[in-house]
Image (cartoon, rainbow, N blue to C red; front, top):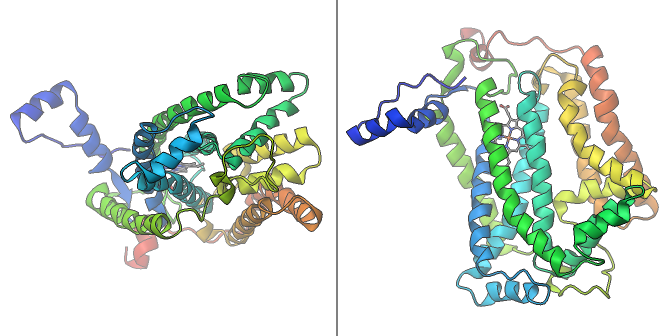
Length: 408
Ligand code: HEM
């Protein structure tokens, strides 16, 4: 679906190069001439913001790695040295730690946008599944990174997460020992987590390339949820989408900067400023905010193995969304009932997030069970049935008609 490139380099040297490796033409057809639906709103700027944030995380991470020491006796101290003695080390670290949170804010907006406008439906199923794989990789990377400062939450978070695997029947204990690289969490654990934390962002970058490739094959969805039919329905990616993406990226960066300069530790946990101590368990072990809904699902179920299964299932079920949602209409704009259930589902996710931060006792457990039930019911019961029984609104004849009305 990439625009037909008429790209011709100006200089003789570039023409020589282009003949041998037509990279200029590829960039031109993908990011300049590429036909973009004319009705995209600001929710479509988050893919660009995510690409930018991936770049920020990789660059700040590489520089942090130049000063960080992956050893249980030195890791905590090396992070304090970065904060106090390395020139602008505090800025680098706050960019990276708050950057992780911003990355997740952006990815959640990007995913809910996809769910609202039905962007996972035919012909974008593979694009969506690649997104789910990126999301899983992001969660693993975030977890591994959080262990590196070797504070109390690093250590105890690593303990809780690695212990999930002990629930595997029969071989659970052996798997955990293998993951740890010993009989307890120790230096080999920290070293392998560091190695993987450095590696995974590049794997993510690779999957993002496939994601954007798949996007360019199917073309972008849009708020009307109907495919472009003629040139009147699209505009060239540059300048229209580039300028819009750039503007919103700047707005996003203002929020990012606000956290870095005014509330750099707001999204973290105070206990991670205490060095890891295997002999002292913190009163409440809480993961980073972006894992909280899944943590609530884990703890809602009394059986350890079933809890772990439910937690992983709550993410994996996303991959089946293109087939669970049976409606032929994509956008919630033309699906009045779906729109209400979408917002209910959104509220349930926020509710689960809130519950994940509460102690697993009394009313909180009861509420977690109800919301966990609804979370799965949304995918397994509500979406398949809505597709059959919902009366959708009439779709516009074309994207330009949805923008301009009958004038189109
Ligand atoms: C590092 C993370 C990611 C990056 C850099 C990224 C990048 C992009 C870009 C550049 C676009 C096109 C612009 C836009 O629609 O906003 C896009 C579209 C899309 N992404 Fe992602 N993405 C990421 C993660 C995800 C995840 C986690 C999912 C879902 C689970 C996802 C699902 C989609 C879908 C369905 C579209 C097509 C949207 C449409 O055309 O309506 N992406 N992505």
